Length: 428
Ligand SMILES: *Cc1c(COP(=O)(O)O)cnc(C)c1O
Image 1: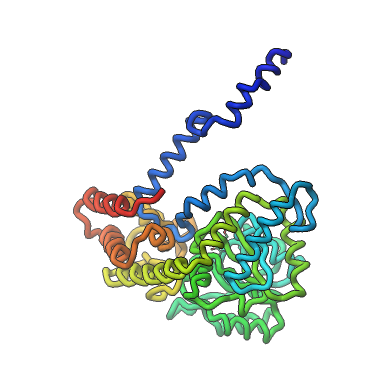
Image 2: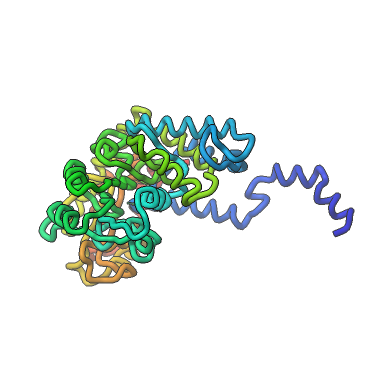
C-alpha cells in the first residue's frame, strides 16, 4: 500500500465518513433488509411465542456506544480498564432484576436463555450427574438435556412427561422418577408447556430427594414480573429466563437466585465458565427493559397477555380446533392437528399465506418428526404489545380456525382483513 493510499484512508474526510455515514448510505443492501423486515413485522400478525416487540428505548440502548466496550468479570472486579460506567450499568440492571423478581441475586450476563441454563447446569453439576427434566417431546427445551445439546452430552438426563388424559405435567411421574433416579437437579419449565407450574409440588419433590430445583421461566417471566403468575424465585434454588419473550426486553438471558451459598459458583459458571465478555449494549437494553417492567403499566400488559392468550385459546376451541390442555395460563398455547389430514409445517404455511406467523411444534407424544410435527404453537406477547385486546384475539382465532378447517372461500379476502387489522396497530 502506498503512503498516499494510507493518507487517503486516514484523511479527515475518510474518518468523517466512517463515523458519520448512516446505514442506508454506507450499506444499502443491509439497510434495505432492515426496511423489509420492519415492513414484514408490521404487515403480519405475529404469533410466534418467543417473540415480542420492544420499545424504541430498548432498541436505542442496543444500538448505543456500549457496543464498543469490552469488560470481563463483574462490577468492581474487571480485567479491563475504563469499566467504571459499565460497572454502574451492570449494577443498575442487576438491582432492577432483583427488585422486579424479589431475588437476592441476579446475573444479567448470559447471552441467551440456553447460555443461562448451561451456566446453571455447570455450576450445580459434575459431568455425568443426573438431571430430571421435562421430555423434549412433551414441551421441554433443548437446553434441558436434549441429546443434540451440550447439556445432553455432559449429563445423565432422565425425562418426565405429561398425563395422557389432561396434557398437564404428571407430578406422580416426576416424584417417582425422582425416587428412582435420585437426580442432583430437577428442571421445571419448557418451551411449549402452556400451563402454570405447580411450584410447591416441584419444591416438595426436590426436597424429598435432596435435589436442586431449577425453574426456567423463559416464556412466562413477563407474567411473573406483572404479578399474574406465582414467582418461581420464591420456590426454586435457581431461576433462569430469557429477557425477550413475555418479559419484552433485549435479546438475552438472566439468572436469579436467593441462596448465598450458590453465588460464587453461579457467577463463576457464567464467567469464565461458559462465556467471555458480556454484550454491554444488550446489558444496557436489558436494564431498560427491566426498568419498563417495574412500571405499573407493565402489570397491565401482563394481565392483558393472559387475557388475550385465554381469549385466543377459547376461540380456537369454540371454532372447532383441538387445544392441548383445553387452554392456557401462560402467553402460549398448543394446537393439536392430529384430527386434520396435514402436518404442522403445512398448517403454518397455510397461516403464513393469510399473514399470520406462527411455528410448527411437536404435540405431546407426537407421532410425526420435529421437522413435520402435528401441532402449532401460538403466543400472544407480541400482538399484545401492539395494543390488541381480547376482541382482536378472538377475531384472529376465528381466522386461524377457518383457514385450517378449510372454511375459507377466499384466502385473499382474509389476508386483506389480516392486513387491515395489522395496519390499525402500528408501531415504530
Ligand atoms: C426460549 C427458551 C430458552 C432459551 O432460548 P435462547 O434461544 O437460547 O435465548 C430456554 N428455555 C426455555 C424454556 C425457552 O423457552
